Length: 283
Image (tube, rainbow, N blue to C red; front, side, top):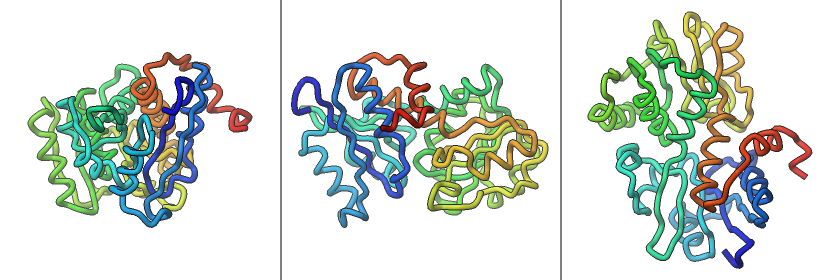
């Protein structure tokens, strides 16, 4: 922070040209009379490693950074984590820089729960298929346990990653059964909830992780991808009669919660939501 009315923030990730995080934080700053500088930081474009970009932020006057795909698990090694739940998740998406070093948080975890409750109220998730066990998948899986899911079926192209998440979940999963499935199409049978926590469907990663035929019989779907907001996964789910929870909701709530950590300043969430949904605010 260069003066009391300027806040320097950033986002480290790949393929983030379409991210709305800079706009969210600039608008949040505007509500509080703060000038927010929010940089997109892409290690491959800078020809640097994640660690080099991270260290440059730590030394470069940043108050904090967000971390996105594919660096959330990698970031854990470079921060102090005070929250036992975040340590168990093993992924960090928000980092604060302070005199005692960088501290890691996970607003994907709490943001997903807020997004789910906004879309589905108090209804339990039931049996859930989740495709993708990376950084955001870990946050969502721990959220599902807290939301009272009956069973979580994990499917990931990397079986070791799915097994690692299952091992981390089981001690804290309560009554939620956790199982590993090779084929998501098979795992979808009998599931109430379908979740995409892979980058498939994101701008630059076209397609869908689950054929539309496999969605029949489910009740709801969530896609962690929010650029674009209407992914093929969610379009197919809606066409199959499922209620959908957009990744935009996760983006919004994790951003609001990250803002609170970065600034400690209040927010009019209703006004912020309206501004983000109005293209004119991007000017």
